[in-house]
Length: 326
Figure 1 (cartoon, rainbow, N blue to C red):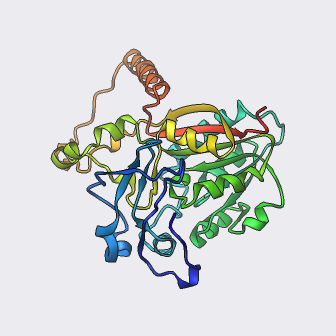
Figure 2 (figure 1 turned 45 degrees about the horizontal axis):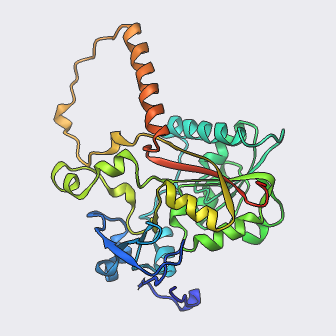
């Protein structure tokens, strides 16, 4: 593995991992990196050095060489990174639906009448905000100052201190679209075990590398049909997990997966360009209620089949520390 210098001695650069972070295998096959990336203003000095590989032993896809921690910290504190700036406005409907999904999944695993939840990598706190309305006692952790400021402005309890997290334990720990950013997943999974109550669970949600959207956004369609692959967030999504690789990462680090599912179709965001002239100012005729009802039923059926086939845009795995799951 790469050796990390003390943070105050680091400069933005690319580093190379010699072993797979999950299985420790040393045989990696280069794969095509996304044609489009983000953060090029931060990573420009070593952009051409960055790559993407697949471990031949466990099939994990990860960025290698990748930006060192100093470069990543510089990106996350820059204006290029807007994930901490939730306004609780235009996104409210989507965020509420997401929180309801997370709540429903967790409630099937937890029986505590007053459950406590930690959202690790809470960003602007949207999940905490909505889950608190559903009866959870919520806490958040993030390293970004803007994330902390935004969350605190909504009255949420958040911190950037790991030592403070260790002062209590939680019925559920969630990492929603943050685990793929973590440089050392093995270390983090070990730390989180100490925070989970007996009977508690860990919920990890990441982009699904085997989603229908991921399958369709192959290089050919990206080049010739303008399909969008920027959701891969190269190179800050350090790992591209699929169901078997995320499950393996959990199992080798002492967790037992108890629920694997996917959510979100993602196909409406597949195209990078939209023909604005195609929009019409002519009001649409109102469809009969029966047609709308039938359409809604078919949408539910299609979504259910898609998610159960693990082709949804987001992969969610709920697990328990193995010693709790016995």
